[in-house]
Image 1 (cartoon, protein in one colour):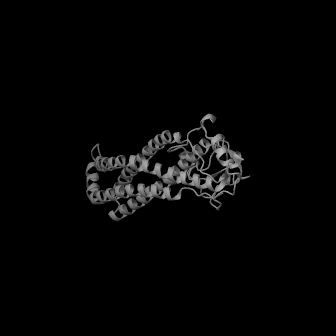
Image 2 (image 1 turned 60 degrees about the horizontal axis):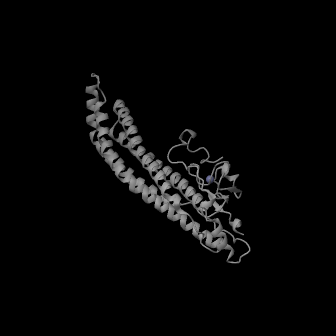
Image 3 (image 1 turned 60 degrees about the vertical axis):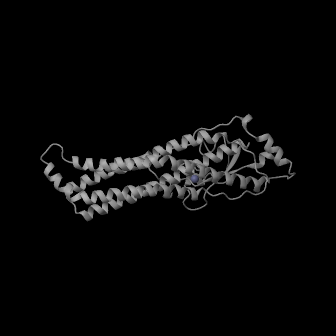
Length: 299
Ligand SMILES: [Zn+2]
């Protein structure tokens, strides 16, 4: 067992975008043409494949983009809340005898939420679109380099899968990005209310705010790693199938953090149709496994 095995708790397993069931009709694949191209080189068997890496650079780029938005959000929030905190404490005491106590806190947090959420909404579309393109570029480069290395020629692919995939992935990720401020401001509202009730010092409040900022940035990292990994896996699967490839070898990151259930799949061959009981590399939360295509089909 390792720390990734149980992370996140199973209840959080189904958030965000999940790869769709994918099938490409055999007549739409470029198997026959690619086989001819490979055989025309006169080689007897495929060469040793490259070791492929997960799309770490794109994950980091997505994380940085989200972190920038979160930094803006937390800085703005902390400034306003810290500034208003002494007044909020006084008001709360005065409001206690009335029905609507805590209203001022709700209004203050709601006001920041309104402004910040609009910025997230404005940025989300552009961020997700550019991350989709970067992931595709990464995946496409790997696919080309691998096929040149193994069969000596760039395989032809049918890229018609890209547009619908871009639409579903970016839409789901825009929704996911919008949950960052909505979750954060729910927590801020609770936090301020609790701290006003307890009558803590401004310094104590500041510490809790900083802690919540850190927690929110960590969530960005989970989103970035998970969503880019899933996308990279699905792009590779779709592109491979379109070239006429039917099987792949499962390859783990070959380090101690690999979850036990994926360690068991390492170096085993699976079909692009079924995967390992419907599971594919990169699909499970923060999975860093990759698929190495089996090119023997062309020989
Ligand atoms: Zn894995």
